[in-house]
Length: 132
Image (tube, rainbow, N blue to C red):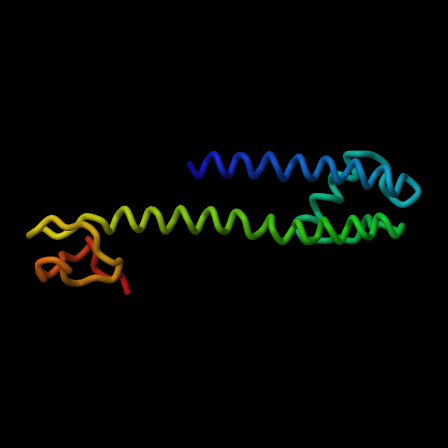
């Protein structure tokens, strides 16, 4: 499920970089360093990644406004995969901690539980015991 999310995310980023690169080529033109669409795509990727080498910079007010939008999108591009990765990690941790109580079989314990909430039996190490 998370692989599909990552694939959609990567395709979206590539599409955005291509569209914004082409737009910047049209807005800024060769006289401002945007000599081709691939060069504009390169600039778009560098800007979205918030690297900003400074080798190509927009000079027109419209190009600078578009740059501002791309920078804001870049912050989201950093945040989205972090959220996907974190959700996958938490989901995996929750699955590994749902083994339940050996005595009564209840498997709905908080991740830091040490004792079964139904029968009071001590939960075995490695099931739902705290990892702190």
